[in-house]
Length: 115
Image (cartoon, rainbow, N blue to C red; front, side):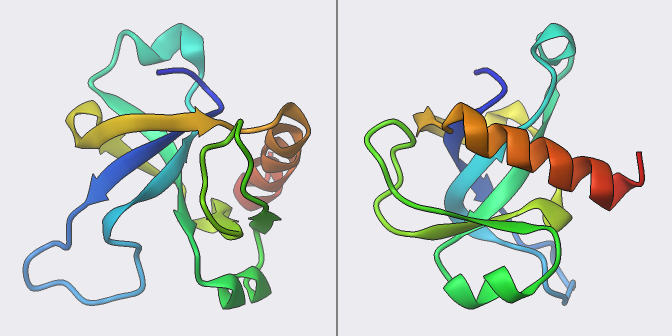
C-alpha cells in the first residue's frame, strides 16, 4: 500500500453515534507518507463517495473513473473527511490515482489543515 493508492475500505459506524461521517464498504485514497506508513498500524485516508452532490462541500474533488484508478463511476474525494484507519480495514487495492489529481489533493489538504 502506497500514497496515491485507491483502496476498498470498511468504515464501520460507531455504536450509538450519529453524524455525517462516511461509513460502509467504499473506496478511499491513501494519503499517508510512504516513509512512515510502514512503521504504523494505521494509515491516513480520504473517503470517496459516488454521491456527486458532495462536490458542493468545500475541500472536495470530482474524479472520473479510469483503468488506472479502478473506480467504476464518477466520484468525489472527500478531503474534508481525512481520517486515520487501522490497516486491517483495507480490503484490497483498486488502483492508483493519477498524479495531477494527487497534486490537487495535496493543495486541498494544505488548505484544510491551514499549512
